[in-house]
Structure formats: C-alpha cells, structure tokens
Image (cartoon, rainbow, N blue to C red; front, top):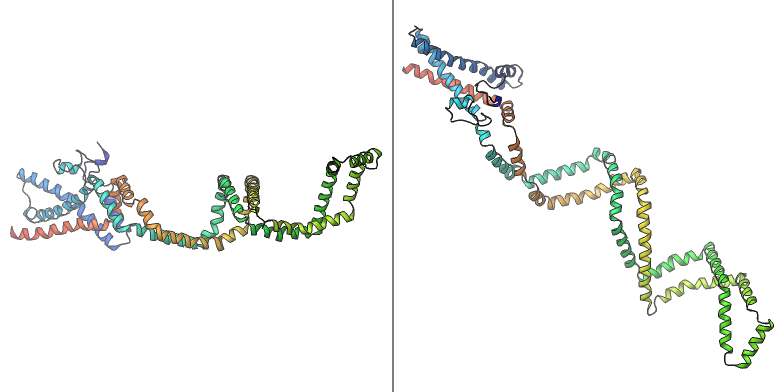
Length: 438
C-alpha cells in the first residue's frame, strides 16, 4: 500500500498533538482559540459517527436506549459532526490523494469517484495560470527592472560593497587580466599602429623635430655624443672618401695627356700619397675645429629637416615614415604586452592608489552609465530574456504536493480550523430547529 495515499481519514501525523501544541504555544489568540475548538470538535465528530453506528446496531437488536439520547443528544451531535466532517473532508480533498489512487479513504468514501486531490490533479493548469498572473500583474518586466535598478544603485553606494570590492575583485582581476591582455594584444597593436599613423601629420612631425629633437641636441652631453658618433663614423669611412677623391681625380685628367702624366708622376714620386691623405683626413676629423664645424651643422639640421617637409614630394616621405614608425611601435608594443605588462599587473592591483581611484572616481563615474542603461534598455531586455511565467510554472510543477499541503496547513491553520469549527457550529444550529420541528 502506498504510504502517500494512506486509507485512514486521520492521516495527518499527530493531528491532535499538533493542535495541542498550537493551543499552548501560538502567539495569536485566534489560532489558539480555533486549535482548542478543533481539539474538541475533531474527536467529538469521530466519536459521534461511532456512537451513531453503535446506536443503530443496538436499536437493530431492540436494545432499549434513553429517549434523551436518541431524540436530543445524538441528533444534535450528528448535525454538528456532519457540518465539521463535511468541511474537514472538503479541505482534505483540495490536496488528497496526492497522486491517483484506488486505496485512499477519500476514494472509498466517494465510491471511487475521487481519485486525486484538486491541486495535484490540476497542478499543471494551476502552474500555468499562476505563472501568467505573476508575470502580468506582479513581476512585470517594468517591476523587475525597477527593483534591479534600485538594488544595483544601493549596492554601488553601499560602503561595505566598496570596502570588500578589493577582496572580491582583486583575485579575479589578477587571474583574468593576463588572458585578456593576450587576447586583446593583436587588436591593441593594430589600434596603436593606426593611431600613430593618423597622428603623424606634417605639422606633428615638424613639432616633434622642433620641440623634442632640437632641445635634445642643444644639451651638451647629447651634442657631444652625436658629434663623437659622426667623427668616428667618418674616420671609419675615410679610406672610402679617399677612394672617391682618387676616382674623381682620374676622371678629371681623363683625355688630357699632360694632366694624366702629371698625376701619374705625382703618384709615382710620392708627392701624392693617397694613404697619407687618408690618415690626414682621420687626424683632421678629430681636431677641435672640425668638431666645431660639425656642431654648426647640427644647429641647422633640424631646421633643414622641417623645411624639407614643406617641399614637393614630402608626402611620400611622410607616408614611409608613418609605415616604419607604426611597424616599430607595433613590435615594441607586442614585446611590452608579452613580457612587461603581465608583471606590472600584480603591483598595480596591490596598490592603494588604484583601489582608492576605483572607489572615489571609477565607480561614481560608472554608476550613471549603468543606471542609464538599465532605465533605457532594462525593460526590453528583461521582457525578452527573463521568462517569469515559465520560471513560476516550472517551480510550481516541480513542487511536491505533500510539501505544499504542509506549507498551507502551517500558514493557514487558523483559517482552516475556523472553516471546520464553523461547520460544527452551523450543524448544531441547524439541528436545534430540526429538533423543535420533530
């Protein structure tokens, strides 16, 4: 036999004990009153049915019974018991049997017509109806959006949330940022390259030469380094310079017999020693006068470059500069994102300055945007994506009917008790005029 559909009509465990506990401990006077009344009506009604059956059996055997019992007491008790038990059975029929059954006492009482309680038999329809009502009247997209907006607003302003933000978000950021940087690396490189190319206009390049390069060259230490580099490079190139001079001399005397003969005589006699000339050039490059000449050249080189940018054809040069500078920046950024930035995340997330900025400026700056989005798009998004009716329907369908019954009993004990006790009282009141008539 299925325990869920026990055939006994007193199948609420410890009903009398529950009523007695309510009568002693309930804080509500009404609940205590109806619990005490049920403590009387429930057993009296059951005993009345037993007494009625016993009386019928005794009368069948022609056993003499007092007239006050058969004409006054028993009819009054029967009308009260019928009123109480009718309401008691009606309340129980709302939920029982919890599943279709042929062995439940309500099934037997109704000669097999009542096989399942109203709520479990119509649970899907009730779930559908309740879900629609909740979605259309209670938890509408507008109501949900307003509540979410209110909660988000209060949370963002909550000092405890801001105080715990570092503890909550810090580990997540430390774990996720390297992966985010790795994924965004190519996009960041492309953005930086395009941004640099767009920013490198003719005016920007000229301003860079004037405001950065020229002041840098004016510093004595920087000028000395540049001059040293120029002199060293020219010294290394002096043999090539002499070779160019020799080729130029040979071209100069070509076709002139006298000049060619004199050049050959000078070279063969040692009067024209190209190696000596190369050494002399190297020595001359290192003199104070030569460095002063080169320094003068540096003073005008920035101005010359700036003027050259205004010449015809300079746009092609600028475009080439943009391409090379963008590629160089992309390589630098790639190396920085791969090697340097991940190591800098930890110190950044541990710094008080970052979290103070987030508390004082970051969240206040972000809050209006979040609130504005919720107010503008929240109803639409929730209406499309948050199926309130479906969630309510699923929740109700999944609920155990026995649990629902116990929940209703615990919440509405006073009202259910009042219905059943009122049935007993109305039955007695109906029995009194019937006695007078009979």
